Amino acid sequence: MPEKKTSVDIEKILEGLKTHYQCRSLADLADTLGFTSNALYQWKKRGKLPVRKIIRQNPEIRKEYLKTGNDPIQASDETKEKQRLESYDKHAYKKLKLLKSLPDSLSPREKIDRIEKSLQEMRSVIQMNLTLLKDLKKDLKDK
Image (tube, rainbow, N blue to C red; front, side):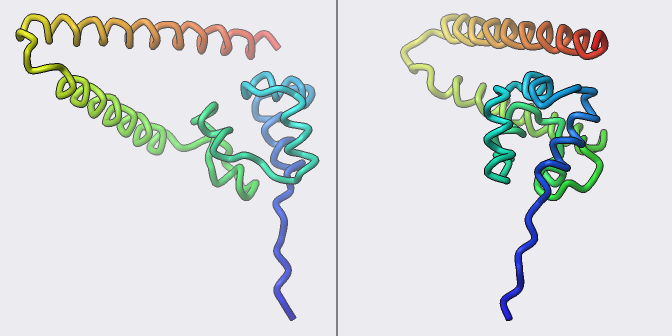
């Protein structure tokens, strides 16, 4: 007799996320996670979560939780630190790639100017993200 696959209880996972983020409804949870409420209802209807998409939007959520529903929802501080370092490695690689992509015909000063401009743009994006994160945390506390 073939072994029956056990399906993950999507409703349990979504309820766990609602509780964790102190959301009153699926619509609130959708907003908190950065998705439309329609998207969450579709996931629930299909009985399947787009794990990668959720993680991309919410890297603090453990992939294992989304796949199995087993606690904890968030990664440990050690795992978060590892993810942060991996992120730095990716940024360092991008910077090195940028440096290598600059034409040899540029003077060292021109290369420095281009890299500084690129770094300033990255800083601006990071600052905007930090401001957004701060606002979101404030909104969560107000709920």
